[in-house]
Length: 181
Image 1: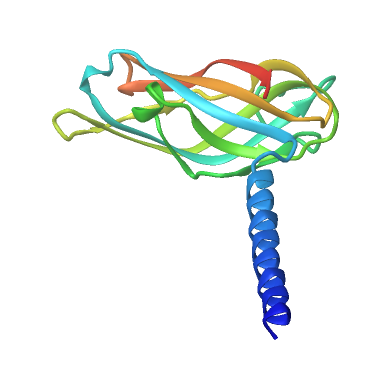
Image 2: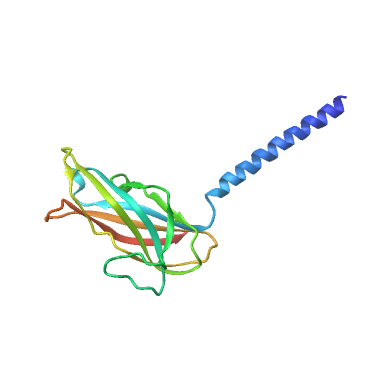
């Protein structure tokens, strides 16, 4: 009787250990699937007066090499959409900490550009007054090849500069860099 009970307990423990290990490995592997990730950092010039500058994200995509960019910055069929992981980027916070914005499983090959498009900006100065923000975001050149073997991280630096026109600030893409993780 004790031998049979001991074997059942041992099998039960082994089953629970195996289940725990399989869940742990599946959770750990979720973040390590190959793909292209878009991260954002920011630089806010003359930012002493900015207490809030949120970038509401419309979409994010990468463009394969060899295609044209149009003056009106339209997204044509060849652009590959990335899945948004956040709908708002806090550009004040992104000065000190990169934000993961989008991720996608894209086709292998060479790429020339990324494009992160906003729907809106919400800026506030130190006195609580709303800031008028001009959208100057456009496709950003970043040449990279993707072979599907790992995660490629693209870090896009967004900059906000005080203007002298009708808007208080203009927001645009400063530069982008790609690195295989």
